[in-house]
Image (cartoon, rainbow over all chains, first blue to last red; front, side, top):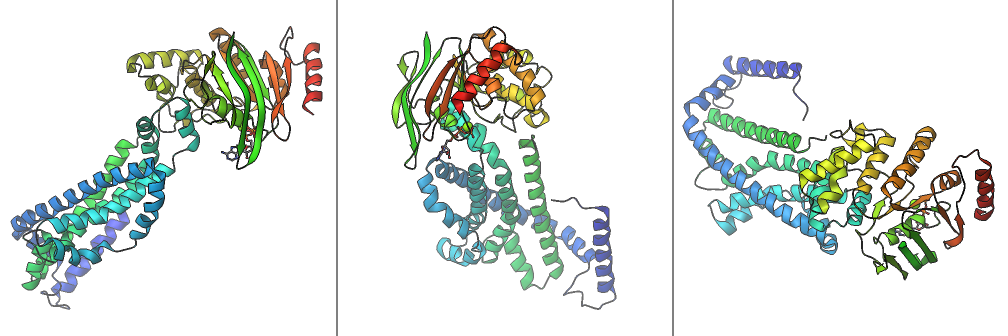
Length: 245
Length: 241
Ligand SMILES: Nc1ncnc2c1ncn2[C@@H]1O[C@H](COP(=O)(O)OP(=O)(O)OP(=O)(O)O)[C@@H](O)[C@H]1O
Ligand SMILES: [Mg+2]
């Protein structure tokens, strides 16, 4: 992602100030559009509750992403190892990316109830396909000559996977991981909207019913920040792993 | 002693015959050249000799043992340098040793020694893209050396280089190969290069590639302006036509 330049920051500052002024002179009633200061206040007042629910959502997001990482890795390697399997399944995987997984959230709740399972599952589904597609298309991008070279040196499959295919797949894999990271928290929150015991989504539905718009905004900010931080972490890991870039 | 031998090799792709009834041998310590125009099937023949491809007919023998379709028995340097772009030069060069489960430290020491010998002592930890074409080629050759195989197949080892670098590399190359006592086959379509470097030349030609000539290079001095050289060159041009 491009770094914010200083004028980007200035623009954000201007918007925040305008927003504050509009709120203060009462153009929009404050219960509908709380001012930035109200939002920050809400964040501080309710931080314990928000923090607790953040942890729950993060837990679901991480669990879902973790399973998606493992699953995509296993499926990706199998597809690479058995080309006929890949030919049968991979086109479906690419197409399935166009289905908004969020649309099936209600179904998951019907099937798996209001516990953690449907949340983790939704995060898993949102993350799994971008990761898998990134990995498999990355494997395919490995230099054919180098693969032959490895064979001519008598290297086995696992060695070639580790030395050649994974590094070649790193670029598109991390691209997939960024997408996953940016959707993981949102995925968990959306599943929580449909009911559950805790998490930012449950918190949101609760404050919505009480028309506490300031808290609503506070949560939206928390979710955005979490996603941003996750993406940043992915970028940091990528830069560490792909030092040759 | 014959170290590598191909007997009656033939190969078709999609029903089209590429090479047919190709037999050739390499003696210990010999530098053999495979000369032929583009597309005649030289790389195909190398893929068979290295065991990467199964021939449709014929067999490959390494020191008398049949190794048809078995890879990892001979060193093979393909047409481009094929250095892994994300590995440092030294780790690229170490690869064949690591594949043979050599201890990492020992492998590194061996790779360092050969890189020093190949005048790449400054480049251990550089990435391949930071090297010039000639340096990359030498690194790829160093890697092929470390396969430890007695026979090396080199597919157009100098084709990527400019004329001046190429000239320097050729002199150096023959010296190094002879010093290590290696048996090699190399491909070229450059007749000068064939005469300069090899002890024996196979000419591969025809619509379906086969060995049409075998020429012994026994000239006293390897100098492209010497009389011997020019005479031999004329002779080969006649045969390749
Ligand atoms: N895997 C393959 N599948 C189908 N055809 C192939 C394959 N490999 C080589 N060929 C064909 O075999 C013929 C010989 O190819 P080869 O690469 O052996 O030629 P070459 O003598 O090495 O040429 P050059 O000097 O240009 O490298 C070509 O017509 C090529 O199209
Ligand atoms: Mg070729």
